[in-house]
Length: 398
Image (cartoon, rainbow, N blue to C red; front, side):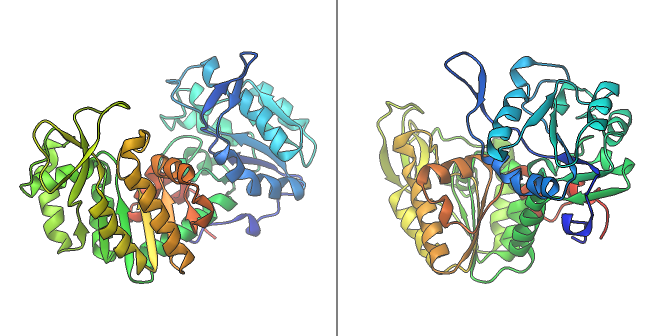
């Protein structure tokens, strides 16, 4: 994607508005104040922020946090994120309780080169999600240069991800955005074969385009999670009380036929009579009894999937294999994480993305053995299926 990067622009003395993805989980400290519970996304933005600071630009950061519904919500303020970022940068990070307007412009006008400020949650303004022209212009008024480094929000046509780029002279991608596009387009367009795609999660409907696209390029498409039961039922298997999208059965059957043998489904399952931490789990082959539900892939399926991964040269994974948050239904996902890490050690190029997949990977302890861990779930799927990402399309052509 021939878009401007940080290497193409001079930021010295410039007001650089950086759209980051600081949509991070918050916790409460002992004194009752909010704190950052997981700073993975904040750390991912540091190379871009540090580049602008080191080159004496003025860093103005914007991000969303949660779903405040277009109005201020103190529980979703970015103030705690500013404090945490200051610790990571070992720099003072100023915080503005406003996002746009005269007060913000005055504060930015007084900034020194090489300083940084974080503005309040963009979603406190209803103009953000509406991609409102006036809100986009107000954001653009803060900047000489716009940089989008929020890959996780790049599939959203919001004011801070797409609209603002229309009203600045220079709009470039940040380091994180650049690395995400490089890794994912490599998987999509020029993968080394054998290529293995792993898709899990709850719904076939969330990943229709991705399944269709990957079934044409991957040598094996391994399906897990609740979405596998929609496929299995469509093919005439008994799935008991497992979660099924009844309105997608015909679509699942068509996708399976189109894939011409490349889609691989579980042949055994970890089941229980309830989705509960105290539920008694067991393994069944093939059909699931009517009073039970499938909650993880079984050991024989793990072996089948591991064998496919052992020869892979390219691997892409989005979505867990089961309800990994509960110990007795986590083994399938953990085993697949280990298999992907082993294949990567043997020379495969691996990409893992999606919130649940990344959480599971972190829990497995194999994150450092993966080639690229994506910060985007929906954005990753959109890019893999070949659709346009508004947050990237809006940037200046190189």
